[in-house]
Amino acid sequence: MKKHNFSAGPSILAQEVIENTANAVKDLNGMGLSVMEISHRSKDFQAVMDETVALFRELLDIPANYHVLFLGGGASLQFCMVPYNLMKKKAAYLETGTWAKKAIKEAKGFGEVDVVGSSSDKNFNYIPKGFTIPSDADYFHITTNNTIFGTQIHEDYDSPVPMVADMSSDIFSRPIDISKYAIIYGGAQKNLGPAGATFVIIREDILGKVDRHIPTMLDYKTHIDKESMFNTPPCLPVYACMETLRWLKKLGGVKVMQKMNQEKADLLYNEIERNALFVGTAEKDSRSLMNICFVMQDKYQDLEKEFLEFATSKGMVGIKGHRSVGGFRASTYNAMPKESVEALIEVMQEFEKKHA
Ligand SMILES: *Cc1c(COP(=O)(O)O)cnc(C)c1O
Image: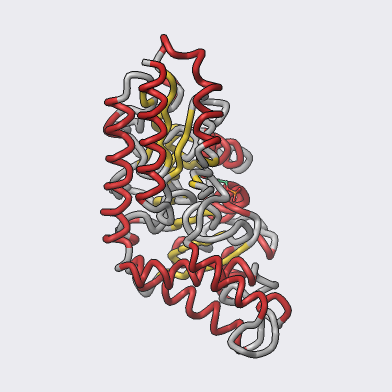
């Protein structure tokens, strides 16, 4: 049976990305060697790194004064690298979910944290509005897509101070005005590739303003100066990211992707609203196009387990909601085909016929 992969992360990749990567694992460029067993300083791997960076620049329209880095440590290491490199006294954070809270916790170890807005009062089911970013903060940090709670910031904010964004789960899902950000970072394993690579898009002029000693590996400058080759980069994950970006470019880029994502999300949100058994958890104007969270209507609560089993029997994978929301979460990342969303909708309708 065909599996429909709605996993939140690591998550679905385009089939051709998996196939091309598998081929490069066996034999890169007909060299008779695997991409896993050649030097990261070899000309063949350097070409992989160069193309990946070039595709990042091209597809996201990244201005020349930004660098694109590939590091280890996941988005979680960025929670500490950002304040390590940028915080003198105070930073502003928008608290929109679990990942934002983790970023805030790390920042508190380096100085004062001003939480300028929070949606914790309603279990993070909306993006706060009308908050003020203090102009004396060293930077302002946001999480553009809240993977666990299914909310998303759909615009590029104007910030009076350098803006830093965790875009782990919505990078390449829409066009972004990069010039509004000082740093954009994320783990690759949601929309870009396999786990193991962390991307960082960084404007160099924001560095060099703190007095503390920064360990070499945690200093962005190290990785900028060595173009992600200070130490061994995550070679195989970077290769797979390159294949994803080739695939994305062939499809027409992020504008086309945004349209496709909107279409898929509309289909599923409309069904959640229509179907008598289910209700969405996020407020409408904050709903994510990447992670769609829904629960059973109150009077059908006891059907939750049964729906999960029913959907699983029909090939749906990874739709169990995160424990902090409950219910269900369908992640509809870039690589998720519309057919899989339609298959899930069919399952929801079949279940409704049986029970409503
Ligand atoms: C998954 C996720 C993370 C954690 O990423 P790691 O690479 O596992 O550290 C951080 N932020 C967001 C928004 C995520 O979705």
